[in-house]
Picture 1 (cartoon, helix red, strand yellow):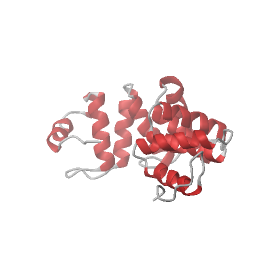
Picture 2 (cartoon, helix red, strand yellow):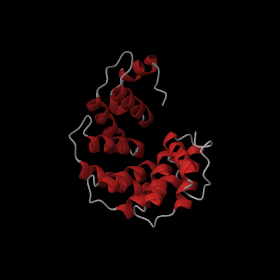
Picture 3 (cartoon, one colour):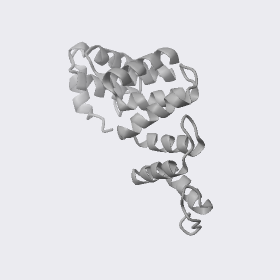
Picture 4 (cartoon, one colour):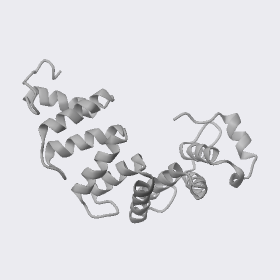
Length: 193
């Protein structure tokens, strides 16, 4: 993510924040979240700005605020409410990052009961939406039979897709599978290194 320049931020800060367009609110929130040369990180201010952008219809801002709510960053932690917000984003907007976050929450029981089948469902939708880490988590689901019937061939194909996207965790798993000859791969200790 490329943050706006300090001169752009200065211009925005001269206006009342409620008069800023949504895209500038979102960028300003990211600046406050991460901090910049001239602005100290202030996650609470970031959440405030994301809330304002969300009230103006920004799906991305709703997502960012929900993640802060889930993790208790800049706002009191409330995993159940974060889960509900992410579920609404996934259902109403088919927002891929919301699907990925819901998968993790179902996988870990954060804000909901552990439900590996629902985790698998949301990992699948996130992967279809191109969310890189979803490929690895979906492959793990197939490799270990978490929420779906164990299937090494499907796992291998998803790990390979993760490798093509540059995921080092998928590369590591494929290397160990080459070493052991798992997932329809022949033992190839040289290729595993």
